[in-house]
Length: 581
Image 1: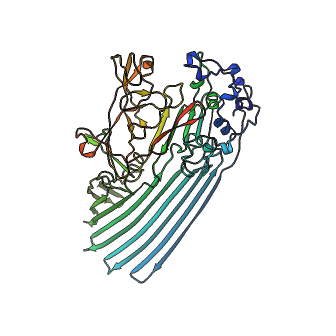
Image 2: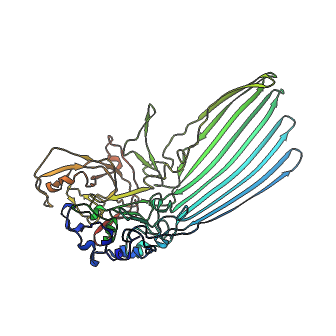
Image 3: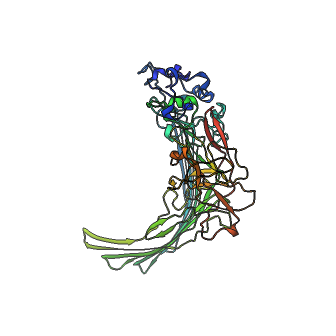
């Protein structure tokens, strides 16, 4: 834990030299005198956050800077379940039953740092609430001595809510950090903080902090009707036919990346000519070196799906020793639909020789540009034959053989749920890093004329160029040096480079546009050429009316999106604050 002296900027006890990032590149930086950060340079926001984190409670080692804190606690787990069943014999031919099951699970796990969050003390740092309910009704009736029928009606509902320990609060906003606690629900609570390096620590909430995938909101429901008819023919054929019809609903809003943010503070920001650097020093200066989080423009994007199955089979006792079974099943799994326009994205892929090729961009947004809510996916009929045989060799030996074909309805969203609502345009994972290992997170935007500006500019409210996220693969153009001169005074030898990223355009309500990406060269002065590989760039985005979109390009349809604005954490660090993507 940070010592009392460290919270005041004095890091001399840590035995690691720290350098002032404002004095240039690491090779030229000036060391902070006595490894103490001046009071005027300490970030008020960082100091406010430290008030949520307890002081050391052990003497510790290495001048009290290591192994100086211990925490204990217990985790509360409540489990309430019950089942109710009623069986009734209505008459000699008709039987009925009804069943209701209920299960409620609640877990509350403490964090090591109290209101400062931090590691879980048992299994979870936060709260988890799960409620399962199921209902089943059934009838079976006999018709004469050789036919029976049975029917089942079933319903279940699964609801889970995983919440951070401080759900509904706004500690980041209260500390003066804007753009993180954007509401009092999904982006509430303390962000996940990662102070890296020697004597580093994690605070707040997140999967990487206290195993809290939170907030997580999921509701899954299914209604099912099953019917079977069995008939005996000639005492040696038993024929069965049946159907199974299901209607499924699903809503899942995950937070694998904490929606109030996951902020990192690395050692490189305060590293100097001979190394050194402390993540704690970077934190005290308020310099965020990376931010990641999940962003959604809405949290009610769910899926709906019809599934129906039919079968017919015959069991033939061909002889006292040989029994044959054969049948045919039809599985019809309808394409899933989403709950409204712009609440699902369908990524189109080509499959050749069992290889999946996904061109980029190649996505259809449900309910936009004539795309139906099911993405226009075509249905198919899945026929599943099956056959079996049993032969009795002796009184103690039986041979069995069989063949069958089946179709899986999918695992964790492969055919229903998640795939269309857990990607763009519903869900986006924002990742912003410093332009290099020694800078705070910042943005570079390219205007129509191609000139680059190093610091985050005022947002172009016409929506010409905005960065939402960048691809992981960068490309650098080689070989050419020029002498450009433009209206912004960029001249001298330059290096050309380009990187494809996703951009968005702010559209007027009700208007539709086709957005497409292209690589655009960016000119830099020669003294920035050595940073060409590390600096992030935004590709120029062109906007076309759908009728004029070039046929040779594959467009991606995106809905109108919220604007991006620049924000700050502390006097030095630059962050990007995205209301929604």
